Amino acid sequence: KQEVTQIPAALSVPEGENLVLNCSFTDSAIYNLQWFRQDPGKGLTSLLLIQSSQREQTSGRLNASLDKSSGRSTLYIAASQPGDSATYLCAVKIDSNYQLIWGAGTKLIIKP
Amino acid sequence: DVKVTQSSRYLVKRTGEKVFLECVQDMDHENMFWYRQDPGLGLRLIYFSYDVKMKEKGDIPEGYSVSREKKERFSLILESASTNQTSMYLCASSSQGAGASPLHFGNGTRLTVT
Image (tube, rainbow over all chains, first blue to last red; front, side):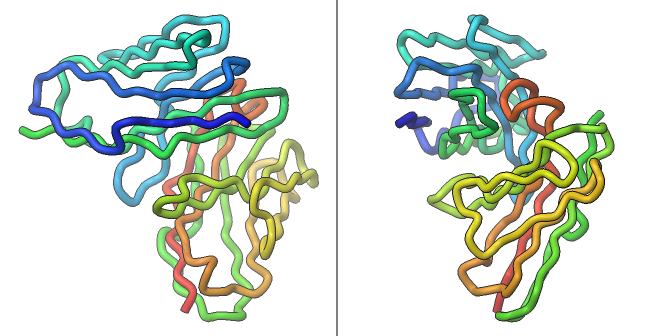
């Protein structure tokens, strides 16, 4: 059974630092992996989607990598800003159905 | 930009009431989803629909039903609300299977059942 883990559950860093968020999954047979951010009391915003054939995706200051063999994805945030403070979730698609398997998220706080 | 609109941000209902949560998307997406999000339990899929009048159960369909009469609208129905259905409800849509293209979420409805 596929399980998705995000460690740590919370992270606090000073503004301006580069940082890495982690997402681990137990079964390497995935279709793709998505990263989302969620602001308090709001819905989720899709950040990046990496297909299983890809190694990374970039959007602005965000870069997501995927290593299926090790069951790991990272979300790299460059030059962090207070506006990056949010909860970041990853989710994997494991087969042809519509289900996603979700991580519990990492709550990120960027201190001014 | 894709817009997914949930009709209510906050809702307070009494036990036993029939509750309708509405969701509309403006991008002609085939697929729509209803999730609930609870602290410590994460996101759990209630129902999804891959076409008009089509629906599939997710992980926790008990106590819920759905309706999709038009492509842009997906309604979640709590037949007889109970206190354990107090939660944040999130609607989402995508143009293909849930992971083949990005999932777009609404802002959520915080439902309290008293």
